Image (cartoon, rainbow, N blue to C red; front, side, top):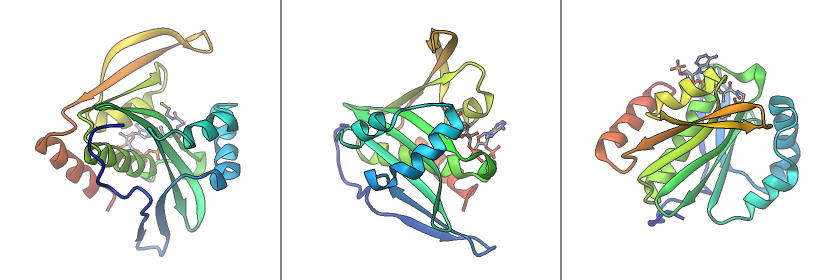
Length: 183
Ligand SMILES: CC(C)(COP(=O)(O)OP(=O)(O)OC[C@H]1O[C@@H](n2cnc3c(N)ncnc32)[C@H](O)[C@@H]1OP(=O)(O)O)[C@@H](O)C(=O)NCCC(=O)NCCS
């Protein structure tokens, strides 16, 4: 885990939009896995196994969040925090709920928690063809630094994206600016 530990990650934030919709972000537990697995299979075909999620949920270095819209899980994201590095491992939004800033909210929350836990940098792998995800991560300051050949299914390359300075006041300001986009 990253060095500091001050944030209560079990807390959920609720916001009601002008259309009366209720959004909540909560820590993922095993009870959420049936719904999460339905989304995982729909989005990644087949994606991670339930066992892989279960194993990460039991890993103290891992943190997974779900986003509910009017009570229904529509998105989730997760990361590992090791020493001073956060590794974003998974982000998925149900296809019919995309373009509504849900992934942005989740990544914002993950990186805020990583900062509070003392992480100073973050990285992830993303398919070279996955422009929407790359744009999402660029928004948060991730930059491509390397290519991992045939990382996915031994066919598609992965782009490795890095973010430095997560602990700086400037990055805190960046997160505040991004938050204005979904508040
Ligand atoms: C990538 C994904 C998570 C984005 O989720 P989303 O909730 O639609 O994204 P948001 O509405 O929060 O958009 C946030 C930012 O992402 C980028 N983005 C999202 N969709 C995009 C698209 N279709 N084209 C280009 N940029 C896009 C934009 O920068 C956007 O910021 P903006 O609205 O200020 O322009 C979603 O498309 C998804 O689940 N894809 C399949 C799973 C996946 O690829 N996961 C990532 C694996 S590394």
